[in-house]
Length: 77
Image (cartoon, rainbow, N blue to C red; front, side, top):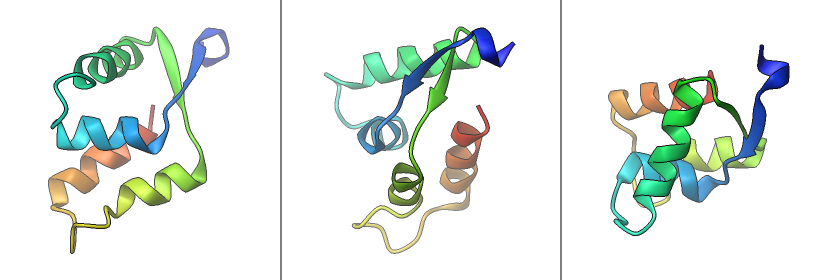
């Protein structure tokens, strides 16, 4: 089934917005893409660099456990 899904590239900023949810002008579009992936309407693709950048935000000393789990769920799509 994944072969027939449209791949949509998520850059670091999309993942960070979905985690931090602090930009009301960008969040709706990011959330719409995330929900489409949950509904198996598209597949999220990204780079190793994005995965690395998202796993440790520069301004954060360590990520809360729930945020780590949320990041892992994104990459299981």
